[in-house]
Length: 153
Image (cartoon, rainbow, N blue to C red):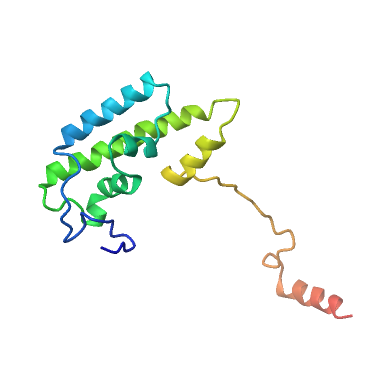
């Protein structure tokens, strides 16, 4: 099945792959195991590592998270579908908070900045305020004509 923009893959409208997890509760348990595994093995919690631990990939996690938008999991009742969506969103929010903590690491925070921008829609923003000191909107028509005649000399 070809991937189309904003359609997800596999479980979308008309998709029929089996569910990756039997229930949202099973997914929650697996995510809790992942957190413990990371702590026990001194590993950072990342979305890609979570996907690996769950035996899937990042795209599948995103499709579960965006099930409503992609038309995924339509065969499930609304409550169960929302539980899957919320479970992935909560896991991502927790991992995002871990990245935020890494921003305080004085040795290097480049990786944390990269993933926050690319996986969590963080942006760098600069505000530039300009002041037009040569504005012509505050002068009368007479003054404007005078300035124009001076320029044409």
